[in-house]
Length: 142
Image (cartoon, rainbow, N blue to C red; front, side, top):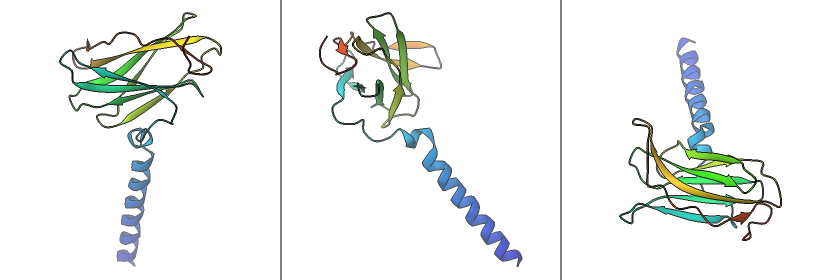
């Protein structure tokens, strides 16, 4: 009986860990954004592609991918033409996507720029120029 209980407990712990692992934010945000996103790649001055962003106008979502395992977070600054300013950072590590959901005003415009952030030093690196303005409701050019 003791052995059966110990085996059952071990299975429950194993099963619980497996459930926890599949529900963790890093695994919940892996994969690709939906098709139709407007993608922007981020490069260092030396030409290394360190990140990628995507604006998904259906749902007003911004996605950020970290493409380098250098310990820095990849993020985007997000600005609307009506004065809203936000950011979205991928804290899940290299090889993952992170999704941030926002509620922008429809029939307005949004743009974004990428950066790397070192949390240990509080320093920003490789800040990109702003993207072109995109309509929030259709993703088309403003």
